[in-house]
Image (tube, rainbow, N blue to C red):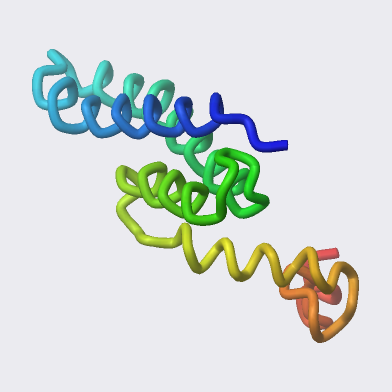
Length: 117
């Protein structure tokens, strides 16, 4: 069931994240304070925005697919690299072929299993 609060949260986080970079970061008094702010607030906003994009891939932020794509694009704006629409396709494909070797794009390759498992 779509929850528009996710969309509102995505817009609020995107606005906060962009404002932090544009307004707050240049006026931070020390290098340590800048890093602390980036690590605590910036990274938290970024992670939450990734989660909003994930929820939109499942059509859980708005009642329509078009609305979910719009929310995903807004959430993606402050994250610099455009990934939201490609992630949607990739993630939906992952769920359509869950645990099917050669079809599920989230399964590790044989090389990854040998070297990292």
